[in-house]
Image 1 (spheres, rainbow, N blue to C red):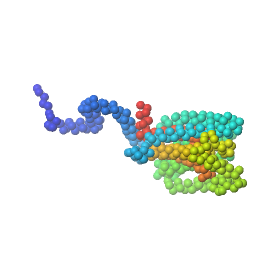
Image 2: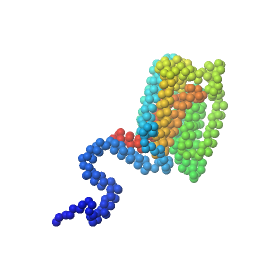
Image 3: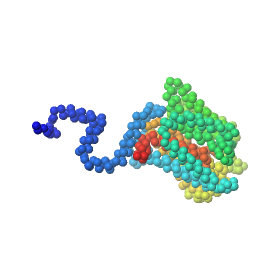
Image 4: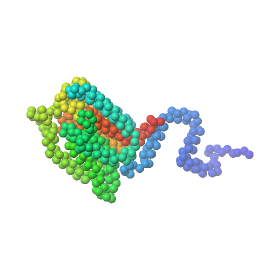
Length: 471
């Protein structure tokens, strides 16, 4: 019996119902349409697929990462409002998360390597004067650099949720380390008892650990308290406030007001982005300002630093409180546009105290001039910009807030250090991140860079790019 063949335009009994069923099946599974298109296209479609294989894979990974970020409930909030950019051409390329992700890592490596070179240049004369090898400080800085890079690589891989889970234990551990400075293990340096270890052999500054601990813990603590604020009122913030004040108190026991102000900046930032009530934030800020003024007024040493920074320095003070700031300005003025050359600084010949530590930016300005100093400032600006841009595009708000806190810490501390060197702020004793000599600062800054990298990978495009590179 011959089977009738129906034309495309000819209606067949039950054909519409069959088409609707197939259409529903295609919408659900997508397999029917793919098979039909594959049978019609043949070898041509296969060749096009081969050409677009890498791009399709990256697009698929991006969509999967985006869907996964949208489907998983954020750590500390119920909404995931992010900055959306559809076109990264032109000036909008500065908002490209992939560019910021790689630019951040390049800036960290550049600052770290440049810091090792400048520490050797700034410390060589001091080491020779002390009867040591001119390479000693540089070799120690290189060892700390390798150790910090190891911590950085290890910190890149854990998920943001893992940091949240262990953040409270981390901040309690940092308080314990800081309190050790009040024991016989404590070491006093320049009037501040903020180090532990064995003098002239091994020392560490626990406050550097506390900075990173607060950056990881406070965004979660503030957001958690904000959730219970409606039912419990201000009582919900009391545990968070108690631990934060314990951190500040442990640091102030050693008399380090500069480091305490950096901790305050981190804490205020976490409260500001975490939903802390504005009126209570302003009130807390006024109380903290009053405490800072009290600590300054009651300390003759701090008062001398402030007066040396904001008044003309008389001749009688040139060898006293004005000595360090004046020689820092001499170094900056001697550099000119291109500098006197690396290794040719005059101020490092025991004229400028702490030339390889807190005042290394003065040696940078003298040896590399305006060009080198501006390059350092630009690298820190890149760090801050990249962290803020990715934070605004990250669906996970815990990761976003941690990025903002780390940016405030590193870029803010760099800004304070530079302003001290050029005379806009009184001497505070805070190092230049990634650049100044000192193992605690360098290791913890690189550790923080690894944590920031892990938080950046919560952004869908970066997550897809990292997943594609592993395939």
